[in-house]
Length: 172
Image (cartoon, rainbow, N blue to C red; front, side):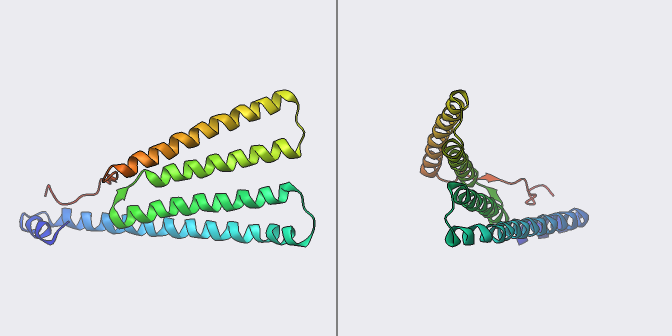
């Protein structure tokens, strides 16, 4: 809300409403900050949790499972960071952009494809389970293509964000 709009509202006798709006915006900003801190803490916890697996990779001959768990954790941290980036954008610009959510979908799909690949390689499955895993991999691959296409189309457009419903003082 601009200073001019605030003065107009204050002059119209709606100081209680202005106080509420300022309080609401302050609490909303505070909650965005708390959410961002919690997401960063979750990332840090996942990284600390992954450290022993990284050491295990260097210390002995390990199978594909240790590598897969490590890659899984790295991709999970990337997803959390991307959600955190989305929170930061909505805090700074008061806009929700769709691209970060699409990126999280791409990372999650890649993560699942890698997990399926490890399952197929490590555990020799019967033909029915193998076929189902390949169908899921194919569907996820198509999903990745769709999500990447959506990102490309959104980037070609200008201003793809959705304004958050925050009171901006238009109606005193």
